Length: 534
Image (cartoon, rainbow, N blue to C red; front, side, top):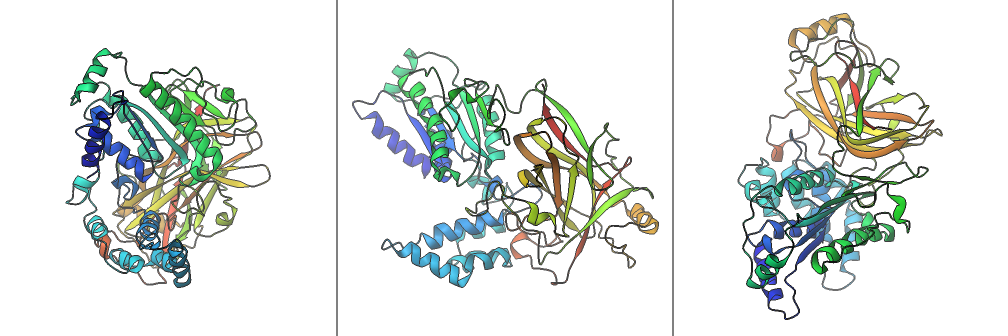
């Protein structure tokens, strides 16, 4: 219906006498979906500029992660907000009434733990929601629901000038980065023009220069655009793009920073503008780059190795992962517990929860027994990382299916620990070895290691911790969290991937799984940082 509506609007604009044949689409969040859908429609060639803000061109990846993890918080809060709080607003106070009743009945918090997942819509809205039922019963990308509901813009032909605006703590960030690359790649394809007469005449007389592709990444979360400073950033990106593509006005300066100093970027004219987290004391809080990810010549891949004492140390690269890992008797590991009935909570980060998103103090999490905290020594010189952070590790679980969450943090000299980026990887198919003489937490025995060697349960995995631009100052420490849940952002792993997603039920409340992260010469685990070259 969105392309049909767009076609109708485009025809209406063409009939307006003052219409100059130039058209732009713009949208925030869900309306950014509609902007991408317009560009991806049959009449997408009518569009001269596209400005999607905290949005993406694919729908499914916002809800389902590779391996089967589900964005529970996004599902619950979206259904609750749109189909309950904003439903039947017959008078101005209905929203307040709906909100108050929801709080008193604890509907939202109950839904975060409710099983099976297929019944969550009835708890939130009082009835089945057909599209939700289809989405969770047929979660595969090629299934009957997502096959036609996922891709809003296929980039089959060159897209118009595009300025993607997103934030380091937005849950749409990773797909938005892929959209930027898709937009660049689309410029090499043959156009399939379906233009109005007025636009055809305008196009033929215009320059054949390549459309500009730009991206700005701020230091904010999904809801931060309600704040004046972030709104200013959005308009500083949008208005020059509209002037350039609709009026033909080439701005001499494009202001990207949230203050009045246009020189706050290292290169204000660069197509990619990155807010550098933690860089308030530096020459620039914004970094202008020619591409994302930064070229290999701009960064150096540096490894921080997991070692004894729960330390991250700068050491030469250890041996690579084995295709068929078998643990050695002397290998070391860290062990922590995971209870499906009380999963590790999320605190800040790329959340859809207005009250639990963005930068948060992580110290309340770091004292829990279901999270592994690995920390470097104090830095003697500043370290700036730009790009994709990865954690290559060897892991084991007593469950058949386990999630491993890695979170990068910056620890100030005062001990204040803040989150920068985080990622989740689901590992299925552990044989489920559960010996009766399970070693105590924090230890490993020779018999246990030999038993594990027989079935080869130690798995080498890579966790995509996420993209970031951040500066760690002198005296700061680099910290990594490893745990097996980020509830309720991600639907808790119940320990078994055999039952269909929509109908899975919780194991007994006392169920506790043991998770291990290995380190050492044979089964190393290391944090991979793209450090900005001097």
